[in-house]
Image (spheres, helix red, strand yellow):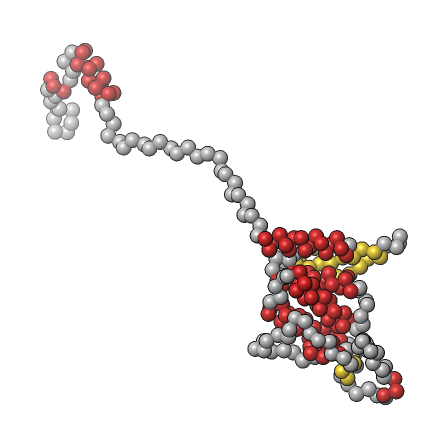
Length: 234
C-alpha cells in the first residue's frame, strides 16, 4: 500500500500458469545481448631482437689499425677515453721488462684516429728520445699524420688545426718553464693561429736552426747547430 492508496494489479501482471512462468524465464535467458561484441585480442608473439647493424668498411679498418699498432709496438690500452685526449707512459719491472701503455679515444673518425696514433707515436719514436718535451710532442704528431696519410686515412682540416693548437700549447708551456731556445721545428707554432686562417699543412718542411726566445746572457755557452738536427735546450 502506498500513500495514495492500494496498488491495483491486473491479471496480466502475473503469470497465469506454471508454463507461462517457465517460458518467460527461458526467453529472458535466450534474448540476444545488445552490447557490442568484443574483438578478439591480438596474439603477441615473443619480441624479436633487432638485427645488429653491420659495421661499415671504415670501422673495420679502424679496428684493424688498433690491432696492428698494439701488435707492432707491444702496446696495451689501459682505458678508452670518451674525450679526444690521451697519454702515453711506460712501466719498468724488476725483471727488466717494460710495459708500454696508452690511454686515448677509440678510433671512430679522423680526429680520434689522429689522437690514438699520436699516443702510439710516443712509443714509436721512443719516450724521452727528444728534448725538450715540446719537441717530442712535435715528432709524435708528425708520426701520427704521416701514418694516417700512408695508410690512406683522411687528415681533415679539424685534425690539422688540433695539431697546431696542441703544439702551440706545448711551446707556451715550455716557455713558462724557462725554455730559452726553441727547436727550429716548432717555430711555426710559436704564435697562436687564428681560426679564421687555414691550419698548417699536414706535412711540414723541417726548419733548420733554433729560434732564440730570449737574448742569452753570454754567447760563449751557445751550442753550435749540428747538421741534420736542431739543437735542443730545455
